Amino acid sequence: MMESHQFETRLARDEGDICAAQRLRYEVFVEEMGASASEADHAQRLERDRFDPYFEHLLLLHKGQVVGAYRLMRSGMAAKGIGFYGASEFDLEKLDTRRALELGRSCVAKDYRGGGGMHLLWDALGKYVTHHKIDILFGVASFPGTETAPLKQALTYLYHKHLAPEDLRVRSKSYISLDQMPWGAVDQRAALKQIPPLIRAYLRLGGFVGDGAFMDKGFNTMDVCLIMDTARMVARYKDFYGRERD
Image (cartoon, rainbow, N blue to C red):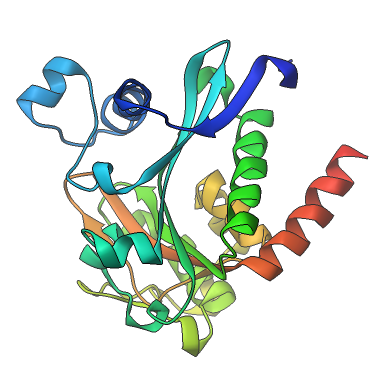
C-alpha cells in the first residue's frame, strides 16, 4: 500500500530532474511499448525529443526517485517557442483562442501503477490548471499497435460516445476514421476493455476525442487527441474521487 507522505509532486528544477523523467519514459515507452529511439538514446536509456526543452515537466517522486511524469505546455509557451507537439498529428486551429494546456508523455513506473500515484499527479495537475487559469486540456493519447482491425470496436465506441463537440473537434492530419464498423455490431463492454486505462480515466472526467486517429509508427501506436474542458473535469474529478475515497 502506498503511503502518500512518502511521495512528492513538483515541477522539474534542473536538467537532472528532466533526465530522470526521460529515463522513466524510456523504460515505459521504449522498453515496454516498443517505441523507437536513436542509438545515442538507447545507449543512455533516455526517451527524449526536440520538444522537451520547451515543456515544463511535472514529476511524481517516491523517496526522491522519479516514478511518474507528465510534460506540460501552455498556449503562451507554445506560441513563443516550438509550438504544440500535438500539432504534428492534429490540426489544432480550433484551440488557438483558448487558454489551453497540452499534456504529454504521461507515465508511471510499473511498480506504482493502479494506485494513488496517478491520483497524486492529477492533484498536482489540478493545482497547476487553477493557478494558470487553464480553460482547455488536451493531448495525444495512444493505443498500442498501428493496426486498426484489433481496435475497431474501441475506435467506433469513441466515435459514437465521446466525439468532441464541433467547436473543439480537432482533426487528424493523417486521417484514419474512428468509425470503423457498424455501431449496432459493437460489443460496448469489449470496446471499453480495449481502451487503455488512462484514456478511460480522461473519459470519466468528461473528456472527448477529436475527429480521426493518427498512426505513429515511431511510437508503435494509434493516437487520438483527447480534449477536456477544465470546469467539467474538475467537477467530475471531485465527484468521482470524492466518492471513491469515502
